[in-house]
Amino acid sequence: MSRKDYIALAAALASIQPPANDDPAAIVTWEACVTKIAQTLAYDNSRFDRDRFLGACGLLAVYA
Image: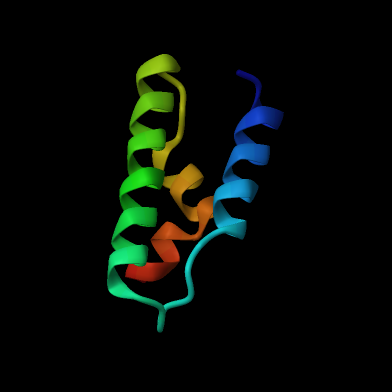
């Protein structure tokens, strides 16, 4: 995958992020999906920046 693909994937995941006041199960499910995708991408590419990807998805903002 190219950098452009990673950016598009992160944008797509960010666009479906549930609001903070949404059902907790929806938030946990979304976080699990984003984390698993990041794990898979990191396995595929040793230079993959997991934190940067999670930030682009909006996941790190949840913990900040």
